[in-house]
Image 1: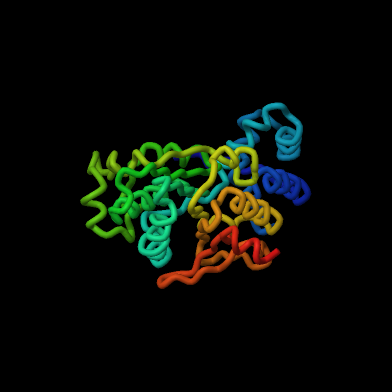
Image 2 (image 1 turned 90 degrees about the horizontal axis):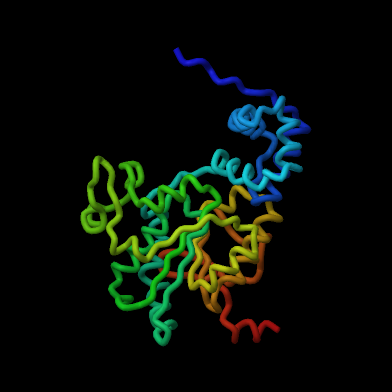
Length: 289
């Protein structure tokens, strides 16, 4: 029999202190109902560092020089990574059938296309985007970059490998599996034609300096990520997205998310299949002033 792992007690005051450090670090917010989750998932970290209790652990992540290593490790343990290929298909149809057509005309002179999947988890979203771009047939010979970022380093390793189990294909049509995946030892690996356009990096969405290195983006996907942030952190992330988007660029959020009470800087654009946010073109900005 396996011995049940000990869960250390976490007092209310120390829970709030640890919660605030996590929020300030990356924007993730855990309400009072999440105390047991923190207690259960981080007890092992306390013991791994040979600390007496959670109060000592708080002092460690607050003051120790090694906290910059510990905080990313906490993210690997606490972040939710539920995703799959072709998630939220109406929005993807708006992207593939309308947004890409618009970008083909707008970027015809540079023949570049840059898309950011922010909070990409295990990589199904950026690979989905790359497949949809390829399916249009519009962008052959273009410089295409689909960049996936996440604060969880463990899931990024899965994205870089590009091999997935059956659960990742719950809404994927057999056509895409046959065309873009190779069966290897019970898993499906994305083919090199799609993989070559996708890159991955560790990134904290609250870090404006690191996000600046990504350069300008035509489209940013950030779906079902901001629901885990508090309001102040959402505003900071959206400001970073606004700065990274080209004029007229698009921001695609999850269907449970909106910019109400977060930002008035974007226009809500109605497409045939969905509504998405758009950074105004410069002439529209000038008209507002």
